Length: 190
Ligand SMILES: [Zn+2]
Image (cartoon, rainbow, N blue to C red):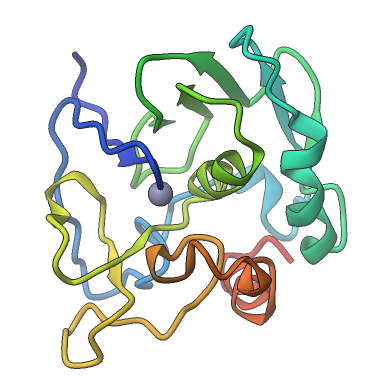
């Protein structure tokens, strides 16, 4: 077990390793930290993040990255092996940004227990440095700097309702809408 942080999958509640909650005041609530994500893909660089399925699960990389690329307006992700983002088979689904969740990413491993495209569209969002928006009743220990999606009185509350929100996992018409566009813009990917 390494010291790296992890993000629990949207559907697969698995707990590994240790995580810490980063609440630096300068950190946008929708990012793990101001440095999180792939600097190579942010402005002014705009170099594609390559994505490789090494899981043997038959992960549909093209379908996963298509809506992210559509709202980014450019090839934010590109299917290529070896990749900056690598899908690896595992018993549970979680995300491992390298070298950490709060530094600029040099790689991102999605440990996958499923090839479900919907779930993986969410997971690859973490490889952009975007946090989960979780229910306030959920244990935040295993998330990094999570936003809260259901309780405006919570200081962690975010009105964000997009691909990374647990509050609307069943409201997929909100996925890749205005909130996700704004998130990509705020993170510097568009
Ligand atoms: Zn997540």
